[in-house]
Image (tube, rainbow, N blue to C red; front, side):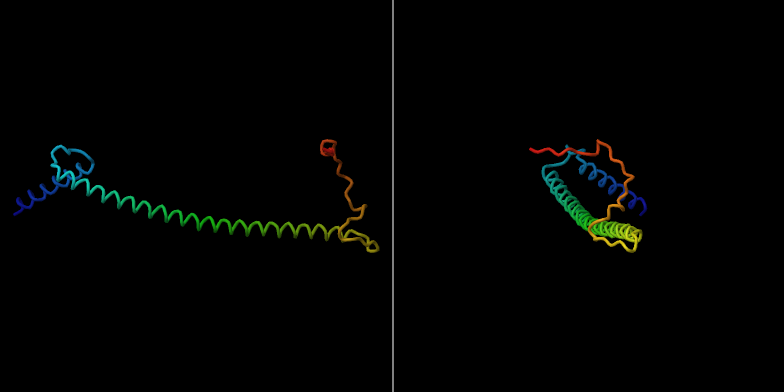
Length: 135
């Protein structure tokens, strides 16, 4: 019984190895025309399944990347708003400190700083000044 089972399994292994070689395009000279056509149709079916799976994976990846892009855009917008808010707070803080440094008797228009509040310590070189040209 074991000898029969062993020979049967050896034959199955040999057939599977031959089939594997045929699928890889090796040892095709021993195949008949009918066997070649059968092998070709099996390969085409397998190839179509591989391509289908590849397309599914690519579409899933594209969908994931599009969702990720939207998440990143939303996060970017959130960070921009946070930066703008921080800059407004800094500007209000700086404006508040300028207002606190004014003498109480002096009033001013919110759109203009009094001349004595402008820091005169900034010295601008000639390179920073651009000449106006009429064209």
